Each structure stands twice: as structure tokens, then as C-alpha cells.
Length: 391
Image (tube, rainbow, N blue to C red; front, side, top):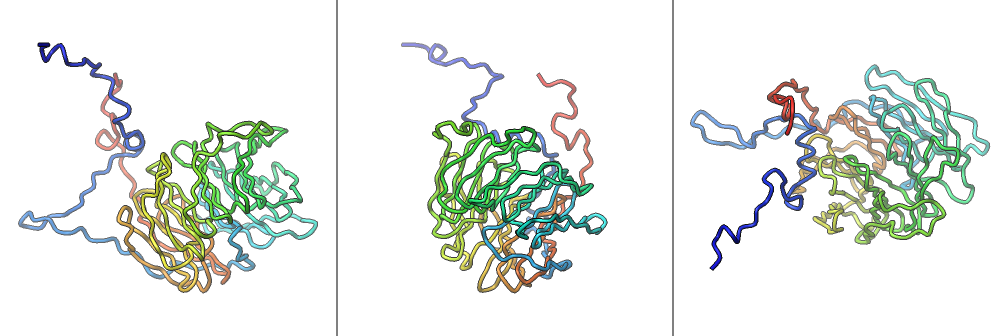
């Protein structure tokens, strides 16, 4: 009979099993400063009691005018960039509001047929604003000086509904004919890749934040597609094996999409008037983790950057914003004030504040999320700070 020692498999003690590791959690633990959190506090007798819930103001912190905003669920007219400047597209003009000093500027150019703006999006570094007009002309604007850096003539057969930057040089567009196209803004021949799958307007696009590998797209055809950038093929090449997951569980337009900032494989989506559901997806296997009936159209949604909270905006009958706890997906608070469906949401890069605007021509700023407290970065808060070498 073989001894127990002879049957034991010897493994290198310094190399763990990759299949048993939570790589997303490990990455976040390394790049996010450690902050001890207590789920319970203690009274004088050392007995735990429930932690007090953070109070969310139910009234908007302030309201700004947003005249001529379009009520069109194919469009994307609000974005807040990393340097704290909020951009909004109103008719054929982009207005910029600097949240730091509350200064305002605007950008517009002459368009032959006075086509309205259909989508705007800031580059990740906040230096370039992509602006799409109704005739599909694309302007890449240096917002600091208001000058067009790159102008790309549009396709008269379709118009661009949605934009998403994969990096500071690659811009992805979703069109009314269902096509999704990548542009490299540094090249003369800028079209580098396309993705085929949608049949109608692509009204939402989101790249995953942690790795920029996965692209989520939602459309008027009630579909959500997950694309793997490593599987994309060059333009004009036989288009095969691009689609990672095709999700067909929604029963209405999908324009509400967002990736969880701390879990790269978690995607939230929201359905329109005939669907009214929030769905959470494991994008590794395409499994629906949860589905919540909200009893109203889900127009937009936004993950909080620093903790597990989700904000959604809605249409009839209440046109409200709703804050949800994740994982339980219980309602924390509902915010009222808009008089029509809340199509456009954008979160401050500093956390805390969220902007919303609708056809009632009001841009409202809400203190919805908790503002992260600055941390003193020392050996107690930064992983491995006490070591000069990791072996």
C-alpha cells in the first residue's frame, strides 16, 4: 500500500491556482487604498447595533437652465469629464459648465442643414470632446480653446446615436443602421474595426472600465450585445467570432447600460416602456444574476464609483431617480422633481453629485452618492507600502 507521502502531489508553494483566484478583487485591493469598514458599531456594553444609514437629500442641490434639450431615447446629450467639466448638447450647440468655478462656455459651428447634436462624449483624459451632428459629421474638439482638432464627414445613409471612448485615441460609434464602428483618431484611414449584430439603432455603448476589453451595446432591437475586443477583426475582413454574448431577455429598447466599476464582469441594463426591468449580468457566462421590475421605463443608469450602489432614472408615471442597494437591490431613496422622463444622467468624476436633465429644460444636480473622503496614504493604507521589494 502506498504511503500518504507518495500519494501527495507536491506544488510550488509560491504559485497559487489561478482558477481559485478572484482576479478582479485582487486588482482592486492593490490599486484602491485600504480603508477599514465596519458593518456594525458598538454601544457601551459592547453590543453591536445597526449602522446608521447615510441621509440622501430628496431635493436637487441646484437647478440650471437647459433650453432646447431633445426628448429622444436614441440620443446621448450629457457627459461629465475627468477634469470636472460638464458638457450638454442643446440643439446645435454644446454648452460647458465648469463645476469647480461655475464658469460657462459654449461651442457651436455652422451646419448646412442646422442638424442638431445627437451625441457627445469626453475622452478619458478630458482633453477632447467628441461631438456628433444629425448629418453624422464628427468633430473632435479641444475644449480648452474651442478648436476642432479633427473633422470627419458623416454618412448620409445613417446617423450616429451613441459614442464611447475605449482609450484616448480609439472612439467607438453606434449608428442608426445598427452598426458599431471603431475609429483611431490618429490615423488617416480612421476606421479600424466594426461590429455587426444589431438590426436597429444602437442607442447605448459602454466600454468596461477596469480593462477596456469588453464593449456593451444596447439598441432599439431590444438586444444587449457583449463584444470582446480581443476577438474583433479588421474592417472589411470576414466578420466572424466578434460577438461574445447576445442577450435577448429585454422586451423593449435598451439605452440604460453601465459596467460596475469594481467588478469587471458585472453589467447592469435597463429596459424601456414595455420592459421596465433592471437586469444584472455575469458577462463571463452571460447569465442573468437578477431582474427587478421597476414599474416604469428605465431611461438611464449609473453605478456609484466607490461602493455598491446603483442609480436609475425613469419615465412615466413619476419621472424619478431611484437609488438602489447592491446586492439586495432594495430601494434606498426616490428623488422627484422632473416633469418628464429622465433620459440623461452623468456622474461627477469626484463622486457625490449626479446631473440629470430632460425635456422640461431643467438640468438638476443631486447629492446622491457619498463623496469619498481623502485618505492619508501611508504604510497603513497602501498595500505593501512597508516593503521596498516584493519577491
